[in-house]
Image (tube, rainbow, N blue to C red):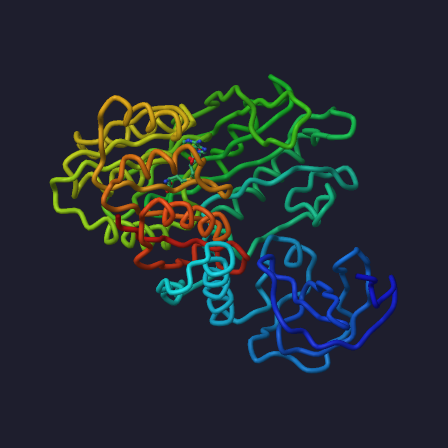
Length: 453
Ligand code: SAH
């Protein structure tokens, strides 16, 4: 359609909806304009910033009528760009937004009209929850800066504090930045592919108080290494592991292939419920420890184990869900693509004296298909794939193998809905879906689905 608006034009609009990435939608003669920072039900003045064929973008200039869900937030750049796209919405409003998002994905993409979707399980304190931060490093006025990229750019906004990271994580990032600045470490310059420090990563075991710091550099060696380590130990009393990762490539991928322990342990420890986990620098570990327990309890409830079942945990990471399940099952078989994570998973089974869980490295779609072709079967299958969802080959194997129950843990409602449709067409019935808010203040949305054959 011909756009009824022009670039730079200012308009008075009513906002009707919120997209999955947190932008408000205002329609002009049916033509949608996406505007950050506004909420459904609000009216205001916008300036058109971009005009595409079927839709455009605008910038909020002034609000006339405010939504009951709007809350005041600090206007600093760090707050604006810190990945907290929903921070101007009351927490109740955020939970409603996420529930709607799951419902709409299931009906629109999954064509699942009558699936029961429960209200989102939220947090009591929906701030300062993340146990991990991984921030790019840059330079400004001769000093190191670290924080977030501005949207659609590689410009770094220096950030002292993120409202969604645990204080220990905020402090660790700040301290590394200070120490490296004092010692004259150069930030990596991605345009020239020069300089040293690319990213700083910090991970904190909330239940154990153990801290890991990872320095990700372009070069195999870097100046003042020992002094940096000494300063970190003295200024961060909780640090148990200081790790160096080398990434020599021109790439947006954060970590490189080589990881060396500079000081302390190779892992830090944390508990989820009463299961203890060793976590190494390269392994995936859920970022919200409080809600992880809520999510896993739900997955365990949906698995409905009695002690006699063979269970597969696909995309198992360091075996977190697997070890939860193993306490209630006959045998658990975990599959994961990252070799370090599988090493951690095996170590975690030993650590908790769990001897009915085994782990294999490889693609879930390959390993589980091979396992099935050798005549093996599972009673319950759990999947927890990354945002892109399950590989189609894995879904086909599930349909062939027909485990009685499938528990699908998802961090992306769109791919969840797509995959549930495939499983439904293969004979499964989705019993219910429980969204869990793992990422308050952000648009990210986690849900667990229970299917029966
Ligand atoms: N269940 C775990 C991890 C979930 S995150 C937990 O709750 O902690 C998704 C995991 O899938 C990551 O560890 C990632 O490395 C892994 N992964 C990605 N693609 C995969 C594939 N094709 N096969 C197996 N694992 C994969």
